[in-house]
Image (cartoon, rainbow, N blue to C red; front, side, top):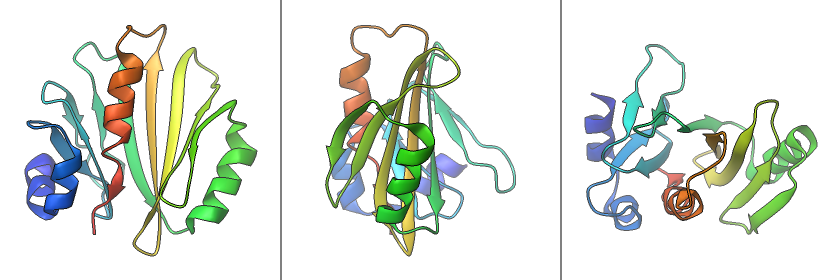
Amino acid sequence: MLAAASALALSGVAWAQAPPGWTTTLDPTGRCAYAVPPDWTIEEPEGLVRPTTASPDGRLRTMVQWVSAQPAGFVNGIRAQLHPFAIHENTPRRFWAEYASAWSGTHHVVITPADHGSCAFYIDLVGDGPPRFDDLARKIIGTVMPAR
């Protein structure tokens, strides 16, 4: 249901950034969007809990949420809290960093400006990644954007 609503709510710009056939999902506020390959599972919890997506093997997981903080302040908070060890992008359009977590794997956070706040997107790979993880992560991250 959420995936179908997401597809209808997004502009042509969002679809232009997603590869053909990918599924777009929104955060519960409808302000933030991203897309994943068509074979991924979209988990749609009830209430205000954020929906997540997972690769077919369950090792790659993603989530997006809208926060009321402006991007610059939110990025500063992310830097202080997560202590990223690699910054992949730091532009007015996007902040993308890699950080260590309590569980093994690869962890990325992406912050983009959104309607009266920011979109915070997370993608995690549990354990060691398949060779194509970086390419796939880049494609998914490239679709993260405000939905309105």
